[in-house]
Length: 141
Image: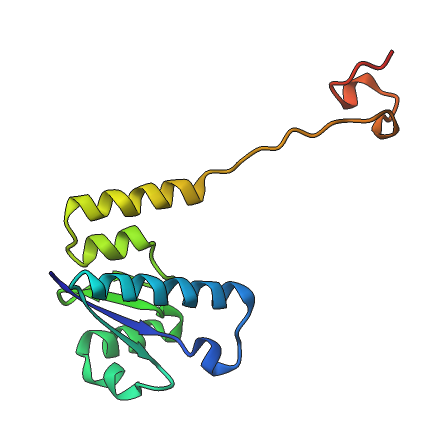
């Protein structure tokens, strides 16, 4: 298995946590725990809590100097930046962590299911009709 390093922005620790950020952090916590259970070495570093780790990694330090904090979160695998500015999908993390194809298939199926949009038919009542038959598909008679 490969080693993943995730260098994260302040997030909720910085006092700027909204529901979208909070959902992403919870998702990341789940996938990191799942990857660790499967034998992947995953380290997470928060800029507020682990600032020395940001300085100790030459690649992270250089990226921060050239791009600023906007590049966070950074995901590094085998010394290469795999992702920046947003958290990657669970499937991408599993792939970069070196999981076998059988596990990747599971993550791919979950990702596919999560992106499926269900369309609910909407009924149009007479009160919704503007009187112009071109405005809807309902029978104006």
